[in-house]
Length: 200
Image 1 (cartoon, rainbow, N blue to C red):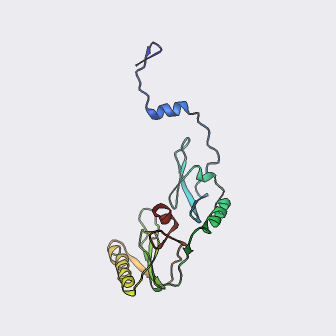
Image 2 (image 1 turned 90 degrees about the horizontal axis):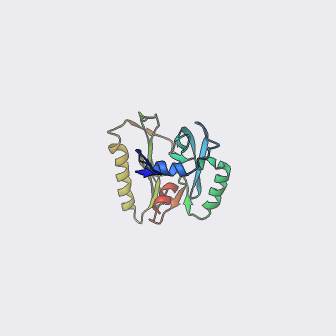
Image 3 (image 1 turned 120 degrees about the vertical axis):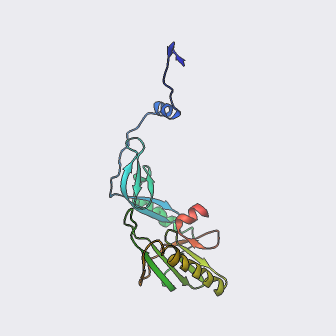
């Protein structure tokens, strides 16, 4: 390739080109491990703890105890995010399940990768089935007959105790595990805010 009468031996990738024409602004207010970071999901402010900062110096992002957060999210004031979430919550039909009947709560052995203890829970609230398996969101599903409700109850109970129990030790917990505020989904049940935001 000839530029200005001189032969260029190196090809410029599209990424190098974009970086060459965009002035790099120094990133300020980089969070550190242990700092809190938040984001608004429907009517919830999801607050996490930063575990690691990656992508420095030009493209920082945060690995947290929940998921990854962007550099821009790290610039937000958590108290303001909580205020926005409370205001947003007025626009949704929500419920916080508690005092489940026929409840079964289990905790699994700590994960080898990070020591995190996963849990599962199932129970009945009026004509609704609450369930959360080992690595799922939380759900509260209404049923128009007790027969259908109990059929689903037994299915999820089997998943909790047999499907995962063969792979990992678990123990039954006497206390009810606190449950999230759940949001009404267009699919006809309540679910975690993150599920409803992404799935309707």
